[in-house]
Image (cartoon, rainbow, N blue to C red):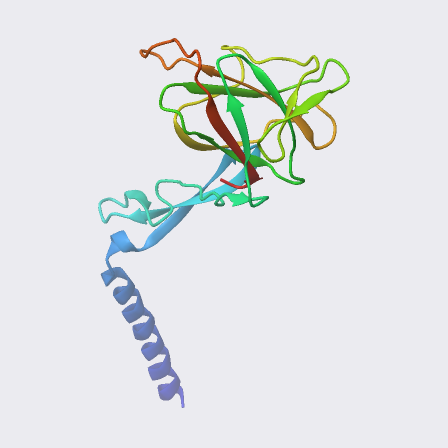
Amino acid sequence: MRASMARGSSFGALARRGISWCLLALPLAAAPAAAQQAVLNTDSKTIPAFALWCLTGTDLQMVPCGPAAPLSVMTMPFVRATPNSFMFPVTAEPQQFLITQPAGSMSYRAFNPCAQADVRVTSVMALAPITTTATTYPGVLKVTSATGTIDRFSGLRFGRGSETVGSAKNPMTGQQRIVSAMLVPIPGYPSDLAGLTCEFEIHYGGGG
C-alpha cells in the first residue's frame, strides 16, 4: 500500500513537472503575462480599459500584446433619432432657425454639401418672445425676433462633408432649439460668398 502511494506521489510530481515543462515550451510571446488597467475619458464618461502584456523570453521583458494593445476605445455607431434631418438654407449673413430637437438625442451628424464655403453653427438664446416665418424645409422655421447671433469667431465650423459631434447644452428650456448659422470663407479660397446658399443638414440621434 505504501509503495503504491509512493508511486502515486511520484507520478503526481512527474505529471506536475511535465505540465510545467509543457507550459514553458509554449511560445512565450503568445502567453499573456499581465494586464494593465487604465481609465479613458470619452464624451464625459469614464471607461475602464485593459492592455495585455506578454513575455518576450528575454530576461522576462514584457511588451503590449493582444487586441487591446495599444489601448483603443470602441464607440457606438450613430443611430438616427428620426428618419429625416433638418435642413437650413445658410448664407453669408447670419440667420436663426427654430427646430424641435428629438427627445433623448445626445449627438448629431452635420453635413455641409458646399465646396465653396465652410459653415459655422451654434445654438443661441431668444432675447424676445419668439416670432417665426415658414420655410420650405420640413420642421424648420426662420426666427424673426431678437436672438443671439453667430459670428465668424463663434460656434462650430464644418468643412465640406459630414461629421458627428455631441449635442451642446440647449440654452433654451425644453426641446425647442434656435440654431444660428452662417457661411464663412475657406482659408486660401475666394472670400466673396455673395449670392451663395448652402443647404446645411443636421440629423439628431445618439452615438457616433
